[in-house]
Length: 104
Image 1: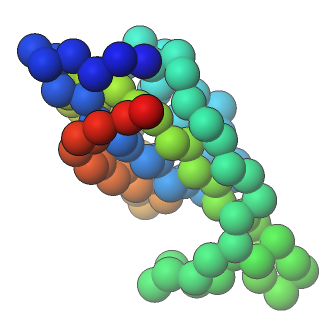
Image 2: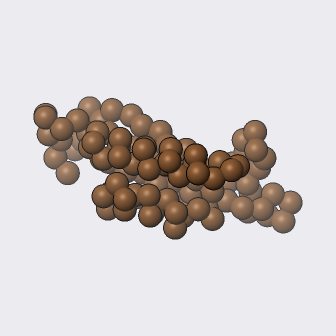
């Protein structure tokens, strides 16, 4: 992927409950995002509790790392916001973004 001067590229990370994998992939498809790197079986702790993949702390998290255009990011962000607003309690999906200055 080559950085284009007229189309700002971003590094995005989606952190989500592992059981939401299919929904997150669907949201990516709606934003026309096809390329990603997936990290599975992640453990962690937050205000909602722990996820350690054990009987005491069931569940795990996943991360999708994505290099996308600013336009795709905004489309994806809008899909996630809409998805979370339509469900109560809001599902555990979090989107982070950093500017991508260079890539080799």
